Image (tube, rainbow, N blue to C red; front, side, top):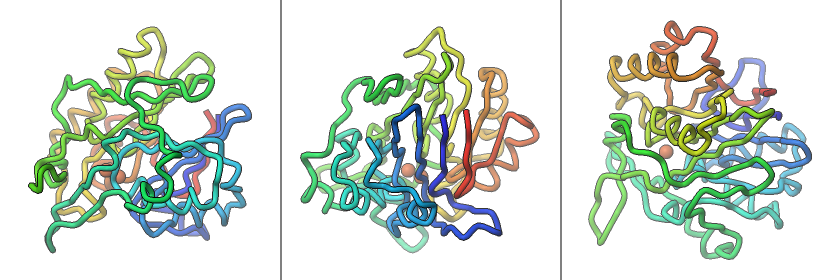
Length: 280
Ligand SMILES: [Fe+2]
Ligand SMILES: [Fe+2]
C-alpha cells in the first residue's frame, strides 16, 4: 500500500509543493486509488496533486473524515475534476461548524455549493461499511476516554444557537493490509485513544501496524489553544503501551505536541509532511 501526503501543514525546504493548514492523502492499494480528505479551502491539496502528476479524474473514491474545511476544503474542486468518484462522509459533516478565534467566531464548515451541485454523489456513512476490498469506514467512535481539551474552541449551530461540537461528524478509515490494520484519522477530534479502541473493537484479532493522522493537540493553524503537556504525555505513554506499530502524525498534532511525544515514542513516531510518500 502506498500513501502520498498531498497536503499537511509543512513541507521540506526543497519541495516545490505548496502548503496551507489542512490534511489530504492519496492511498493506492492494489489497483484501487482513494482520496482521504481533500485539504483546506485554498485547494492547495488539489494543486499539489496536479504538480505531482496525479490524475485526479481517475481516483476511484473519496472519503472525508469530518466537516471542517481544512479536510473538505478541496472537495468541490475535486468533484468538478472527477466525475465518477463517490464521496463517503457522515451526514453530520454538512452541519455548520465554527472555530472561536481571538478575532471572533470563524465559519469552518463545508462549502454549501457541494450539496447544491453534487448532493447525489454524497454517500452518508451510518454504520461500518467496506467501500472496497479491505477498506472500511467506521462512523461510530467509542467514548471510553475524554476528548482532547483543545476541542473546547470548536462549535456547531443548533436551532440558531452556538453549542460545543460533539464531533459526531467524524469517521475513521481502516485498511486491512497484509493481515494488519492501517488506521486513518483526520483531526482525531474524538481523541486517539478512542479511535484506537474503536479499531480494536471492530477488529479484535488484528494488529494495528500504523496510525496516520493529526491528533488535535492544537486548535487551528495557530498555537493559541493547545492541550496541556500532561495530557499529551499521557497519550504518548498510552500509545506506547497499546500499539505495536508506527505512528505517522502532523497537522493538528502541532509542533509542541510532536516535541512532547517524540522522546516517549522515539522511532515509533514519524512526522508527516506535504509530498511525503509512505509504503506500508
Ligand atoms: Fe484538521
Ligand atoms: Fe477538524
